[in-house]
Image (cartoon, rainbow, N blue to C red; front, top):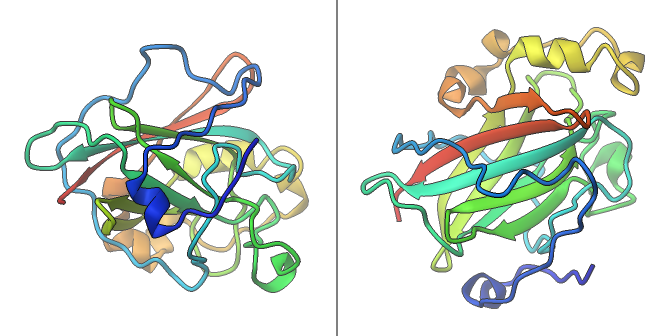
Length: 218
């Protein structure tokens, strides 16, 4: 796949990146998140953000983990209308709890990081893996939404603990037991994470499909 850093010019441009068609990782045509006009809570971007991430759908870089399709929809919180061509920027830990560019993940600056533009329905999709845990935090995904060259939302997306418990019973997560923080113990989750919970289902191909609609103000 052709990949390039997402520059300010790229945010405003109209180039698109074709999706790779791996079985089980593409949602059915017409399948979309239910529309919500609730304003997504603003939460810290944390210490692991790297600007200028690549415009791409597959962000795994071949790292192991339970395959997951992340479906993020962006709507105007005032009108409920989908926002087309917004840039959704995500990053999260790999199955071992490492962030690319930092600590044990410092040898790479790209795994579990990427940007996609929303389509006419406000939808941006990523092929990734279920995030691993690291000390002191509940399991989460970071997100920024750019529209018109501006950051219109910075947040974190969370998983229900019951879903994480089920995923972590299997390899490679099972080799790292005893995660130390659940949602209720996470200070950032308590600051609004309950309104940023992903809806997660496991499809017939064994892929976790995680869906959320984010209402933003331009």
